[in-house]
Image 1: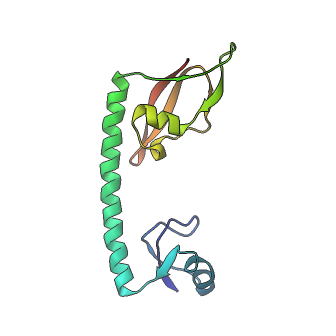
Image 2: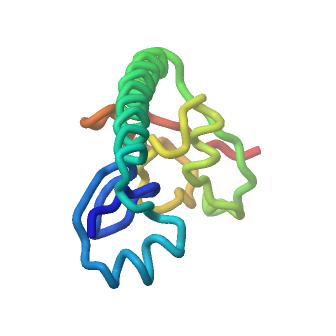
Image 3: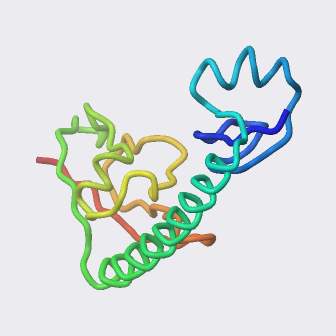
Length: 141
């Protein structure tokens, strides 16, 4: 059965793609959960327009993130949190905290796990199809 995905589905496809899947998977799982719609001519045209708009937004977002990263290389990002005498934080610094301090989108920050210690840390950032990075300094309050 040919369907148009309305959301990204792991192992199946990305949002606004027209794909061919088994009838049972489409009728019993994807369509009832709102992850897909049947591939009618109107749905295909709508998906094409949305996919084009999504691509334009990704390009614009990548440019903005790239410009912000260039600005961050000049200005240090400092985050202040409470810590004990050994330098361990009471509350970890996660992607949300970093994104807020650096004025970047949360989904661009690609840290493996939250930072739990004071000091300077490198933060990888997704820029379009590639990666960039900047440093943050975590200090005690």
